[in-house]
Amino acid sequence: MSLQRYFLQLSYQGTNYCGWQWQRNAPNSVQGSLQSALAQVLHQPVTVVGCGRTDAGVHASAYYAHFDLATPLPGRFRTILNHALPPDIAVQSVQPVSADLHARYSATQRTYRYYFHTHKQPIWHQTSTYLPFLEKPLDFEAMQAAATHLLHYDDFRAFCKVPDRHTHTRCTVVRAKLSHEEEPFVFEITADRFVRGMVRLIVAQLLEVGKGKITAIDFEQMLRTRQRPPHLVFAPPQGLYLTQVVYPTLSKLYGDSDKNPGPNFLR
Image 1 (tube, rainbow, N blue to C red):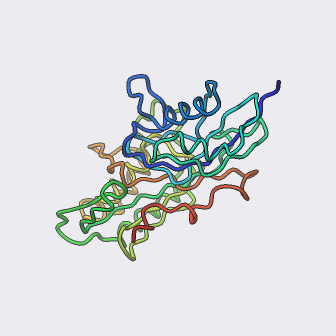
Image 2: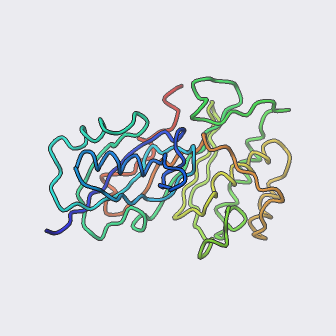
């Protein structure tokens, strides 16, 4: 019997997970939990391929994965699957697709949002990064000026956790915008691809700009020279969300970041 490929759109709060990818020495992964639930519902082992890796503690409001199956899906499949999943993982939709559509390699664009706040708010404790003890308000104008430089460079070796493990560190960033009208503040970045640790490394340096520790010119110099910061600092994971993945052939079905917010609904 031929295999049918299915695309899943899911969301998860990553607080209790070692990240998306299953790891032998850290079994509590989103991928592992999803595969276990699928095996329970379908009565057979199922391998799920995700659209990319998210780190421990990172969330997703729009994540995509695929799996292949030789037998038809049971009735009320999504409802039953969600019942089998833990409360911090939810499948939003299931769609049969052609066998050549790949969750990772068919994606042409991804969007991340990073949420942070400066006034203590307990309900954002695990979904936004709290920045206490600031000596002065963040300079958002300088942060945006620095972020704009991201649009003019295509090699992000300076913001890659393990550059030597990548074939290359080139990415095309098409959006880098800071929203600071109200808390939680949001930094949104869209690119064709991201290298390991890229968003959290960028956010950490943008916050340094906002605090006046470095300038927007210093930030651009990292991009221009491809030299990483002297001390590699990552922004905390809890503020980061994968919010959009674009597949040209599925554009009408998936991937509207405005419909997949982070913690804004808590306002």
